[in-house]
Length: 106
Length: 236
Length: 148
Image (cartoon, rainbow over all chains, first blue to last red; front, side, top):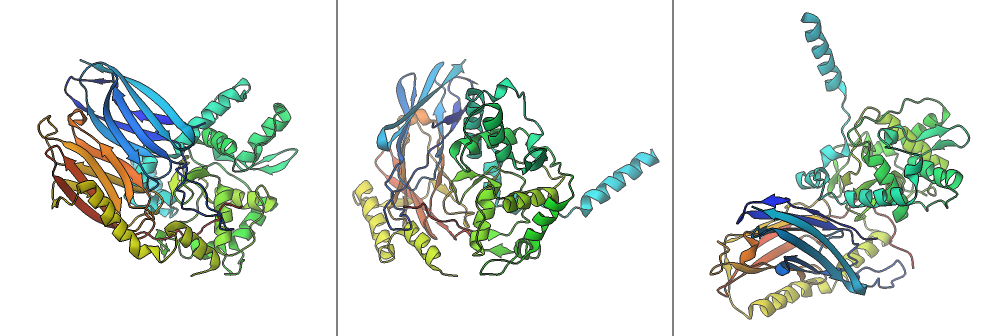
């Protein structure tokens, strides 16, 4: 049921630095909350976000409970060649989500 | 030429006389930026999920686009009386689709409502109403209640613009529902927000869908008539 | 206005009160673990956070580091810590020359009014840092915590 969105240019000049903006729906349950009865609510977060560009890792973010729900992550990457950027979110309870975007580099 | 000039002056005067402000105007710049950014607005995730549900649930079989629909809710159904948008969606499901009603504040109902309402983004609220439901909603707004003995108007009319805890008190115009409330870290309905307010003044909150709540929604939307919808809004 | 519900929420947000003093030590320990005791140089890092947050659950943050981002001279990673959250780590961003620019943005949770520290780890092994102070208040109209 989780969904993610990516915003980045679809075209760029070789060597240009492009901004990549991402958001993913996830509650990021911290593990520090308790119910009114005092029972601890188990941690359930995205721990890792990785971006690969034609198979090469170009960016990685290690996330902790202090990252807000529905994590928004924006970063930069150099447009080196045409191809596919793959974005992978993974975390507690086997959470795994992948999105891709293509980039035309002239 | 002179007539056109008079029209401009009249319109400017009319606009200047409207002192109503959306909750948007009371937020900090970075929160406004969050609402304005189509990708970064976390409410858009619910809208997207709603779009998926819309397709999978077969709503598109009867309905084309939902532009303008949310500007006219709550509204009167001939058989069922005053309904808000969530109730209208559930009515479609149970009576037209033989599908079960979705629970209030369930992820699915919030997403569907957000998707429908987002199609009216930028459009003015169109509630031209009168009658008993409106009067009851209005009475609720102005009635003191709860252990703290405050009326909605105590904060939202007499003290709008002043601060309560870390935030400015808005005028309580529901211009962006369903919206992403930072406090919830989720998208929720106007009724959820109203029930938070009632908890805040230590009053007994009616259950979701109770006529008293729908009538209060109705009054609030009528009071905001003409203001533009911002769904999905972001609020503190 | 303190009442039982407000107290429960505060407790949920910041764990038990006696831990608040210990949190700053935990942050120092986490930083030491990263740097191995190497000095944190002031400068080159710009940490942008609102001085007064709208709501502590969602605080927009931007970190930028002045660097040519070449193979020879680049930012390897940006690490973010808080001093009063139940746990000091916020995020670790791995960059490198393919980043082009050392700029990252995200949204963080802050349990209380406190300082946030961003530390840039450079390709030459040096560490640079900046800190920002954020005032965090509770929302006025809360709802019940999830039931048992």
